[in-house]
Length: 118
Image (cartoon, rainbow, N blue to C red; front, top):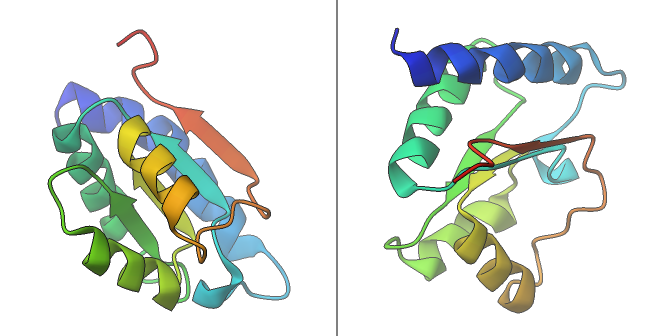
C-alpha cells in the first residue's frame, strides 16, 4: 500500500469499526456519520476506494463521495439514497450544503480533515 492509504487506514479502520458496532444497526437512510474532507479529487477517489473495501462485508454501511467534475445530479441521487461515510472536496461540499436539501450533517460523529496543510 502506498503512503496515502496507510495514513487513510489510520482513521478509516476505527470509523468503520465504530459504525459497524453501533446498536441499533445503522441504515443507509440514517445519513452521514463520518465526514472526510480531502483537498483533491484524486485523494477523494483513493479514500473512497479504501472505505469501499473496508465496508464490503458490512453492507449496511455505505460510503460515498462528492468531487468537482462529477455530475451534481448523480451526486444528489446518491445522497438521496443514503450515504453514511461521506468523502468530499471542500468546494463541492460547500456547493451541496448550499443547494442540496437532502444533505444534512446532523448525525456526524467523525470529522476528518485529511491533508489539512494543503
